[in-house]
Each structure stands twice: as structure tokens, then as C-alpha cells.
Length: 227
Image 1 (tube, rainbow, N blue to C red):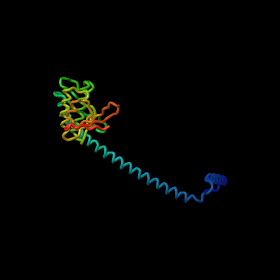
Image 2: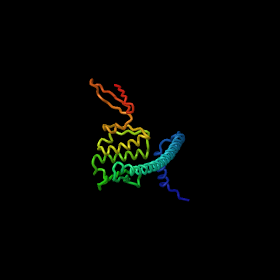
Image 3: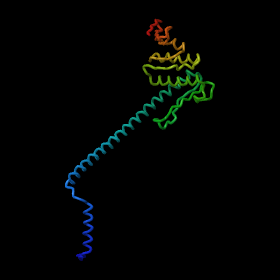
Image 4: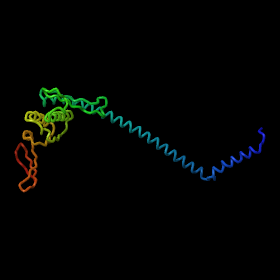
């Protein structure tokens, strides 16, 4: 038993009264509000769990896509690099060229380096080649892609504009090969390129200043014009 001390009990009473006053008036709807907040809290918890699950699923999908992209890119690069080894010597007789990856360890961000060494030259960087050589190396890379991953048609815009007659002749031979399996649409000013075409389409201006479209099949030489 603890002896009764009036002063201590009065101090306890005063402390309890101050605590009760801080609580304020009793809210008769507290239980209902608590139930509503508890229900809201559970709803948000469930929503958060769904978001976390969705995030995990999306990250898994991203990983699967990245893996597939790397696989497809690696296969396409290997096939294109193999074709480049075949095409480059045909456009640069006696020369050597190959494709390399700038970052083989990361196929998602790696770049592709084109090494080209024409016959009689020691340089391999494209920046050190002449304009015609750079253009021809670019065409070799482009044709390598065409042969590695064939398409029903190709569109090329003056790819042979910087080539001399000898290199143009080599490129035209490759055009003839591509014609066997695909349709080529070539924008050109080269007469020799036009000679191997099946049809020509051009734009000219009549004497009255009206633009006219001209088409001609190279087999029958019958011209059809439409303004």
C-alpha cells in the first residue's frame, strides 16, 4: 500500500485534466471515420501492391525485349559482316574491308565501325578516303545489308553520283544481281544506270512552263506523258 499524500494526488489530477483538455470534445463519429479510413488505407495498400506487380511484369518484359533485340541484332550483324567481306572486294578489287562493333560487350548501345582499305593504301578510316571511295564504301555497306536481309524493293537516291566510270560499272553489276529478286527504285542522273533500268520516270518542263511527268518502258520504248 502507498500512503495517501494529498499534494501528489492533486498534482496527478491536474495533469490528467490538462491531458483531457488537450484531447478535446469527444467525436461520436470517430468509429465510423476510423472504419472509412481503414477501408481507404486497405484500398491504397492493394493498389500499391498491384502497381509493384505491374512494375515487375513490365521490367520482365523489358528484359525479354532487350534479350530478343540483342539476339536479332547479333545475328543481323554477323550476316551483314559476312556479306560485307564478299561485296567490298568486288567494289574495291584488291582491297580489304570489314565491319566491327565499337562496344561488343553491350549490343544495345554499340556502334558499327566500317573499316575500308582500298588496294595500295594503308589507311582504314573512312575519313581518310576520298569522296568517291567513301561513297563506294557506304554503298558496299548498304548492299551488304540488302543481301543479308533481303527486301521486296529498295530505294536509293543518287548513291552513285560521286563514282567514276570504272566504279560505276562495278556497282551496276551488283544492281543487276539485286534486280533478280527485288525491285530497285534508283534516283539518278547517270546514263549508264538508266540503261539497265526496266522503266524510266522523269520530270521535265514544257515550253509553256508546265511541269510534265514522263515514263518510258525500256523494253518497248513507248513513252507515255501525263501533265
